Length: 109
Image (cartoon, rainbow, N blue to C red; front, side, top):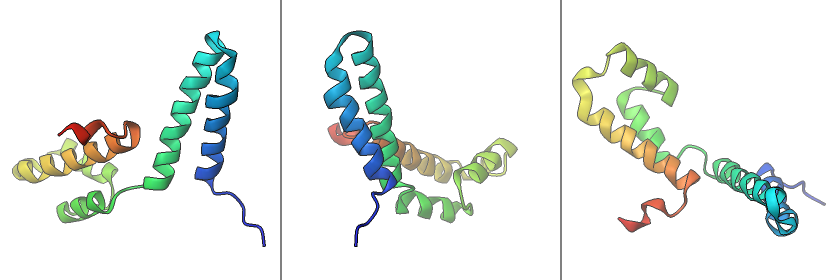
């Protein structure tokens, strides 16, 4: 039985094509293919990574199911008395996003 490629596998294949074949053209097309391949690699990591368990747990600890509801509560001032907890959750969320957008960025710490 043949299985279908996952979305992440398809995205990775197109990124490889852009990086290895189209980029060789050089010039502006080569540059744009590199940019497009980088975008696809970010999408691939998002598909594979989704929301980390630690981010999900931090959101739940604050009483929220997702980042949108947390953002609304911050805008409304409902968490003004929980600044340290909110800051720690936001730092965790940023580290997670950086791990997707810029792998290795936080390795220097």
